[in-house]
Image (cartoon, rainbow, N blue to C red; front, side):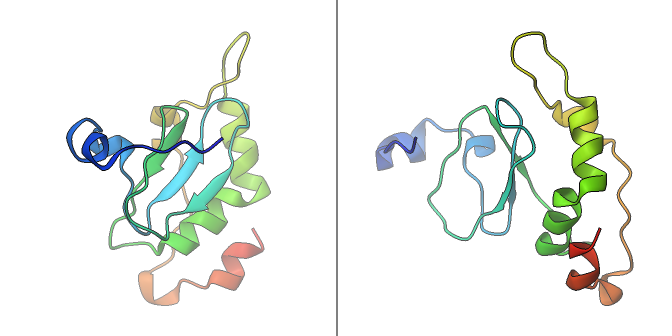
Length: 115
């Protein structure tokens, strides 16, 4: 459930990990595992159950989003999930996953959607 955070709390109390930027990818890592979204607006904050993935200049955010949404990578992430009562995706394991990234100029979003 969405809750409101005051502007003062947003600016002074939240860490950068809690304040995603436009084009960051959000990944649920507790509870409903592996759900993804691309940030489209500023002034958003997330809690510790959501990981913020920030792309570099080698990959389009949309490409990584579709890649991580694919059955291949969802299966890999969920297979690495651990926990006795509540399953948890460990971001250190996600960061170590090998991801098929073509050269920047040849990234095809339609191709990534079909993974």
